[in-house]
Image (cartoon, rainbow, N blue to C red; front, side, top):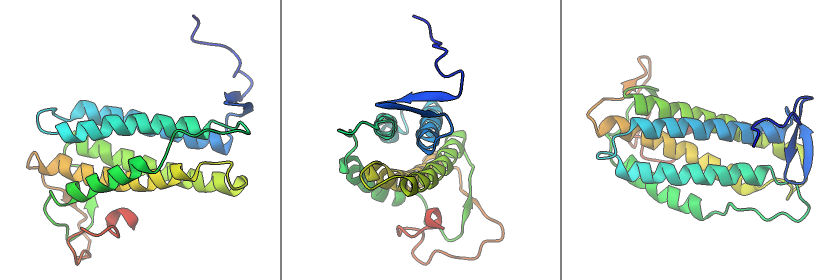
Length: 200
């Protein structure tokens, strides 16, 4: 079996039910999700299984869910059957609440960094936000129902999860988050609310 097909040599690529230019907004969105998935894979390699077993279970599930998101975005058939549902979002919300209660309370904005795993999770978080922006562009270009809204909801919650996970990746190994030097004390609730740094 040849890895290469030559069918994309002229700047077109295949979807489930059609072909588009490789810079189509749909391709940009699910290509970014693929990039995100790769960085989550990198984070998995940087987390000690004995310390982060619960997060590794989360991240492996997320990798599979991101594949589902990408597949749903690539589906342009008239009779669409999407894989993603709101169920993983509800699970993730529960995990976010648990993880956010674990590290020390926030008073100031923090910088991406600390342990290698935390830094990688912050990279994944910012890529998630880029994918969200690309989804907004995609919605503007298509009629209602042509793009799965659940993917947008999933990505929005995932960025929150990755922020919480990055903090835990530091706190469980006793590495402090790096505070933004010129930040005021901005978190009256210690950063516990959903309207936190991740939403700024």
